[in-house]
Image (cartoon, rainbow, N blue to C red; front, side, top):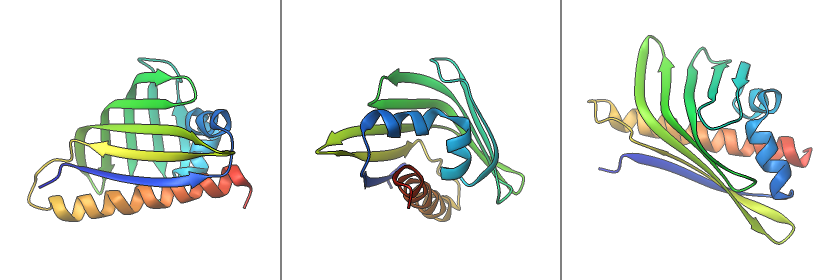
Length: 140
């Protein structure tokens, strides 16, 4: 069984615009569907969002590569009193023509009995989040 989920989408915007939207708390509220977000955009900084559906995600920024890569370690997902993690999230921004390919990958999904349902829900969350980011950045 795979212990990761991933999503990839083309965003018609420059790499620096997409990268900044990934690390800006106000933008993150939009693409994460959150009521609040806090991002200390530096290695060792906190990444946290309280989502509109009542779930929370949090992690520590483990690695930043200007305009191309964000890695979150110690990533946790909490919903309905269940805390999953620690996991790792990698956000890659790869320039392509006038836009970028954005890839979100979440590794280290646990193998609890409901692993498949959690993996499917996590995949749906990343698809929704990357589409929301695309629409937000492109202004559509």
